[in-house]
Length: 153
Image (cartoon, rainbow, N blue to C red; front, side, top):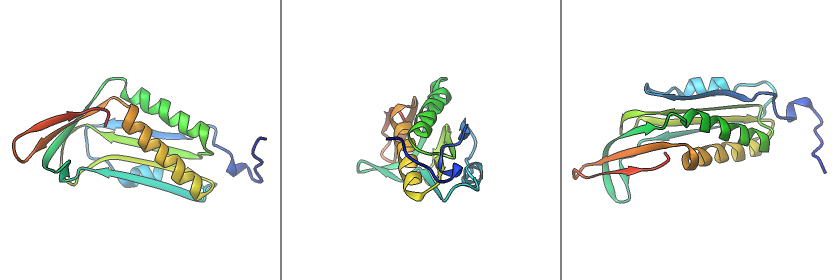
C-alpha cells in the first residue's frame, strides 16, 4: 500500500538535490546547512567528517584526498537514490580534495525531511553510500614516516 501523506510537505520535493560539489578549498558547514533549509521540513540532519589524529593505532600527521573525474556524477547518482527512498525535501553534500591537516573538515552532508527519523536515516544512507561508492581516495601520512592509500573516501 502506498503511504498516505496529509500534507504536501510530507512528500519528496521535485528536485531536492540543492548542492553537490567537490572542492579544493575549505568547506563551510553553514553553506551546506543553508542549502537544505526548507519551510516544509521538521527535521534536518547534518554530518561533518573531520580529519582525525589517528587511524588503526597510528598517529596521523596529515592526509590528502584526490578523486576521479566522475566523482561528482557519482555523488549525484547517490543523492538521487537517497531522495527516491526517503521523502527528502532538500539534500546537500560537499567533499574536500587536496591536502588537509588534523581537524580540517573533509566532508559535509545534510538532509531535510518532514520528520526527524527520516532525516537521520536519509543522512546516514547518504554519507555511508558516498564513502563506499564515490571514487575519492585518501592518502594518509603518519608521524612515523609511513603512509598509505585508502580507497573510496
